[in-house]
Length: 127
Image (cartoon, rainbow, N blue to C red; front, side, top):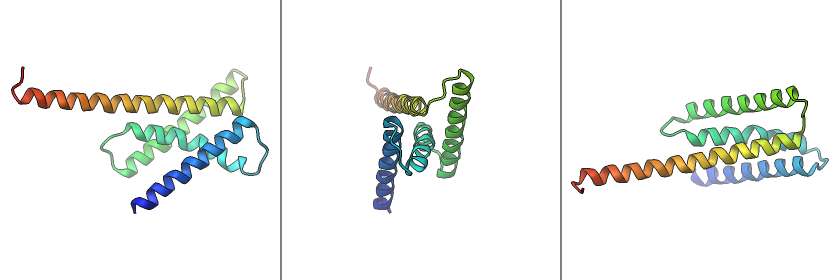
């Protein structure tokens, strides 16, 4: 089971990376219509799911899907409002947002780990 999950993760990662590269390099291929929307929907969903802890799979999947749709709709509305529609800008914005959420996840998990170590040290009677 773990092997299939790891394989699915790598295939999805490569497909999303290919979708981003196709959009950024403006490559005209039939795969663009599949891989670029896949990237735009999966990256915010995975980033949002990564922020959740101790949630069951259905709740995390529901939250990630909703967050992804919200981010993409708000991005599209903002680009249309400011007359700045660009697929390259959308891909770059989603990449920046995904990176920002990844950094938040890393910092949050590191912060929680420090608190746990500090609270266990206090419980042992150390000053």
